[in-house]
Structure formats: C-alpha cells, structure tokens
Length: 128
Image (cartoon, rainbow, N blue to C red):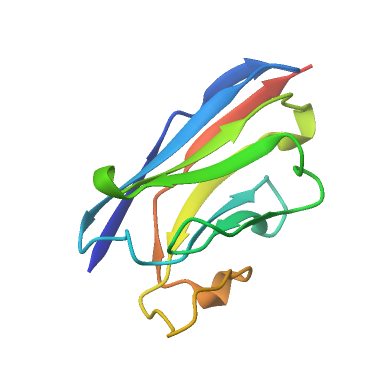
C-alpha cells in the first residue's frame, strides 16, 4: 500500500507562486509513474502534469504548460508541483496520484483510471 499526502496549498494572488508537495509513505513511489490532477467545483477531475518513474520524462496540460513544473525527489519519496504565474482559473483541489503497477518501459500516464493511489487533496485558491 501507498499513502500519499499533499501539502502546500493555500491562497495566492494572480501572478504568484506556490509549491505543492506530495509525500509518500508505505511502499516507495520512487519507481512509480506519478501525476497531479485537479478538480474545481462542479467540474470533473482533470490532468495537470505527469512524471515518469525515472523522472526524465514530464508532460503537462496545455493550460499549465510553461507555468507549472513537476519534479520528484526519490530520496525523499516526494513529488512536487511548482506553480508559477498562477491564474484564477487554476483554483481547484489538487491531487497527486501514483500507479501500483509499473511496466517494463518507463512512460507517462494521463488518465485517472490509470492510477491506483490518491492523496486527499490540497486546496489552491488564486485571487484576481
């Protein structure tokens, strides 16, 4: 089992920055592909960013590309989401996710059904 705990959310002004953290306990996530998703009120959970288990591949939703950066620190069993140039439309609950199964070829994953472990989420509010 893997437990994921997000932190770092809060209130930020438009144009500001936040860094979200996702700390894992239980089994290591250092060799698992991971991702960040977000969900705004009344909307479906959507993909934000993904990182491969080796950390050498990343990808982003078009809406955050160039502003957000996903990274991982395997020694700390933690994944991060650096949010820069925040916009009001970034307001949502942010969730990190990890896969239980890892394929023989490292790759990225983009869909909620591809992930087995989820954190409880952290609220991000961007004021205009």
